[in-house]
Length: 170
Image 1 (tube, rainbow, N blue to C red):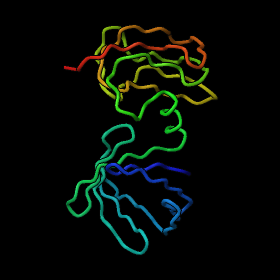
Image 2 (image 1 turned 90 degrees about the horizontal axis):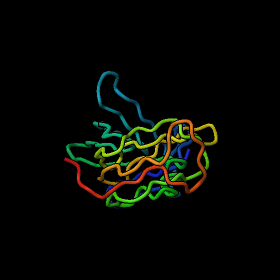
Image 3 (image 1 turned 180 degrees about the horizontal axis):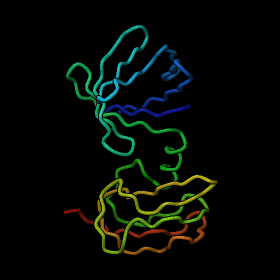
């Protein structure tokens, strides 16, 4: 499985094959075991052990503490990264503008209503495409100006699903 791991300003490509990790072309033996009932993980990487505290911050973001140092980490699989690239997510965004279908599909859920305030990452629409459900989210803070689709509707690639107005959340 290919992952894209972002720590600070750097994104690294990580291939995971069993207990073997390849990070930017360099191979490591690794294992990660969670400590049941706790947010702790025991990481063995290249013969060195680390006891980490890991807490999900939602979606793909994590707060990791390693020996008292806080590390903000984002982990995306290849498919999610590709979809976000198609809809413009992953870049800083003011929150205004149209959210468009990244591919043809079926709208299975509309998660917001007109006039609702949203923040970056708020789910807007669930689109089923190629037998997979994809939740499209707000790229930034804003207000739902118009919902252009409804559940059960088929859409084409590029079709407007939701329009957002730039605005800050309360």
